[in-house]
Structures are given as C-alpha cells and as structure tokens.
Image 1 (tube, rainbow, N blue to C red):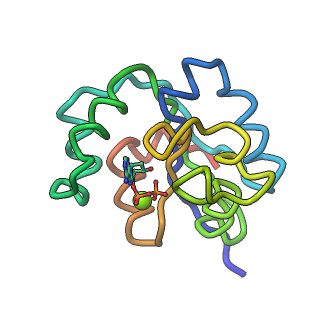
Image 2: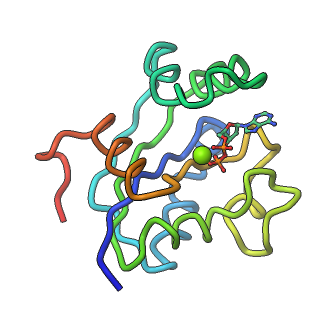
Image 3: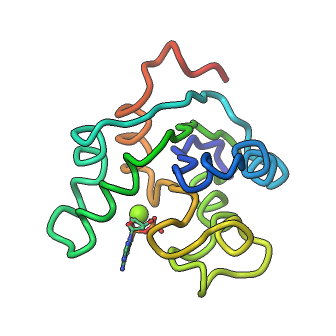
Length: 140
Ligand code: DAT
Ligand code: MG
C-alpha cells in the first residue's frame, strides 16, 4: 500500500468544545501522522471557495455560516492509505449513521456540525492541501 497524504479539518463545532487534541489523538491512534497543522478562522470567501463543489446544494448557506462561526484546525495527514483511513475514522457524514468509535459518532452534534472534514479521493486531497498549505509548511 502506498504512503499517501490527505487533507483534514477540525471544524468550529469541535474547536469551540476544545476537542482539537482529542480528535488529533484519534487520528494519530489510527496510524495517521500530522505533517502540517494550523489554526485558521476562515473568511466567508475562503469557505465558499473551499466548498464550491456544494454551491448548488440547499445547505450551502448553512455550511458556509457554520464553517465561519469559529476557528478551524487545518491539517495534512500522512500514512498508508491515508485518504480512505481518514474517511473511516471520521465516520459517516450524519453522526446518526456513523459507526461506533468513529470521530463523528463520538463527537459530532449533527449533520451540519459534524466536527471534521476529510478529503474523499486523491484528486480532492491534492487540491485541498494546496488550498490551505504551501509546500514549505508541510514537514514530513
Ligand atoms: P462529508 O463531509 O462527509 O464529505 P459532504 O461532502 O457530502 O460530506 O458534505 C460536506 C459537508 O456539508 C458535511 O460535512 C456537512 C454539510 N452537509 C452535508 N449534507 C448536509 C445536509 N443535508 N444538511 C446540512 N449540512 C450538510
Ligand atoms: Mg465531502
């Protein structure tokens, strides 16, 4: 299996509840390594750009409001099969459907306030890492 990098975000609902460390520990315990990390309070424009793929969805306005309601922690995670592994440890988008022991099952409040983001494919991982980080900020 190849060593991959993926993009992860600890969302405002989680940073507000002081869960940055608890969530990062779950990622690390799953074998993922944090090779870049910074705390960002994103602007409306940054949130709209990051989630542009969802701009026609009915929840887009709510999504942008939620993502700009407090600080996020943006991270690059590295490890074997990192993209899929991160999606597995995150759990389903709606915490009501998330498996036991996943980040969203343990910590998420609702489908909108679901504590974490993770890239869903190699192409989106590359795009999302580039959206938030320069090459020199990633230290493997
Ligand atoms: P994921 O974050 O699991 O990749 P997604 O890409 O389908 O899920 O949606 C992006 C985010 O948008 C999701 O984490 C929370 C929000 N969202 C998705 N569906 C929603 C809905 N039905 N109501 C409110 N927010 C929603
Ligand atoms: Mg998604």
